[in-house]
Image 1 (cartoon, rainbow, N blue to C red):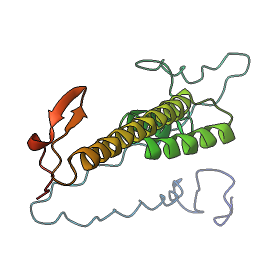
Image 2: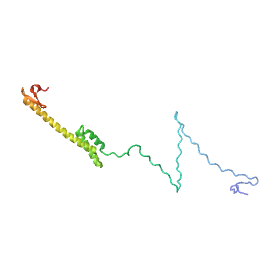
Image 3: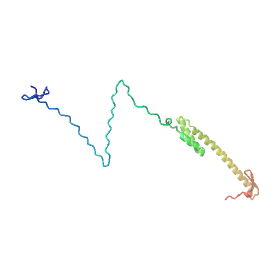
Length: 185
C-alpha cells in the first residue's frame, strides 16, 4: 500500500476502494488586467506602444550586415569651415569705392583676422589697395581744387577789388569784373 502523503505512484489507491487520481496542481495565477486612463473628451484614443526591437543573436561564422553607407551629398561640394575675415574683406572691398577710410580700416581688420587663422584674404588686400589709391587721388584732387579756388579768389580781389574795371581769367577765358558779383549774399 502506498503512503497518501507521498505517493510514489501517480495513481493513489485508498485501502478499501478503487484507484483515484491525485488532485491537480494549482495553475499559476493569471496576470491582473491593466487599467488605463480613459481619453479626455474629444481626444483620440492613445496609440498602442510599438513592439520592442530585439536583435537576433549573432550566428558565428556568417558575416553580419552593418548599416548601409550614407548617401552622397545632394548638391555641390561639401561645406567647408568659413575663413575668418573673408566676409569682412568682401564688405571692405565694396565700401572701398565709396568710403575710403572706413574700407581701409575694415580691410586691415579682415586681413589681420585671416592671417591669424593662417589663410589668405584677397578681398581684404584688394580693399586696402583700392581704398588707399582712391584716398590719395582724392587728396590730390582736393588740393588742386583748393589751389585753383584760392588763385581765382586772389585774382578777383586784385583785379576787381575796389571798383576795378579789369578782367579775370576763368577757365581760360577773360571775364570782365562787371560780370562778377563781388557781393556775396
